[in-house]
Length: 290
Image (cartoon, rainbow, N blue to C red; front, top):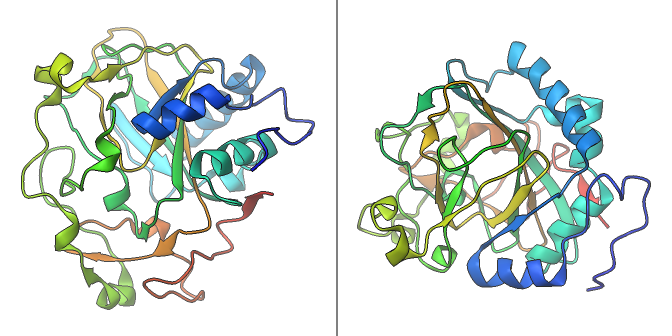
């Protein structure tokens, strides 16, 4: 696949991922992308998310620690970013896929003084009704943040191991309303490790934990199988606002895992076909590259 990004009017808003960054991503499952988007795009996305925070979707939350998802395509400033040619090309290269489809967007907000009791180490993919190697996330920081103010940290190489069973942030079991499709869920118990995630933060040197700090416009690209966490925001006066976009490629397939949370927001529309093992298709998931 060509490493040259497409020529496009938005090229300066989102920069190409370098070959060296790709090598790091493939080896570790994660790579930091300094200066990934322009300052003007940071301002545009931040303004759109502030509006979303005041008018959350059906999937949005409340409180000092909240998130919202699957809303960006309905807001033109966000849509331009989510469907950006260079961003899609970056995703395709990272996945080693000939194509990249937008999957969903996800906003994360930690208000000041919103620490997390302990750490919530997890992998994203088990929560999602999808399987395959061609899935990647770009987490964009819109504020300055450090490990003390809810910056993401990662366990490099953990994308090559099995899945830890998904839990909620407070450790309880999760469920989701999948409607009639719940009957299609398959036994996925053989996907999950027997043990709980180690307390990686208690011995970060042993596990090689990567603790990044970010400036507005910095991003991190990571494999949806890699273990990551945040210690919450201990800053007394600064919020942490981030915006993720997830892509899938050619080998991604629908699934539903019985007994673990499968995000109902990520299913096709009720009038669209769905079958475990079938290629991912929905009008909600436009092809971005090529």
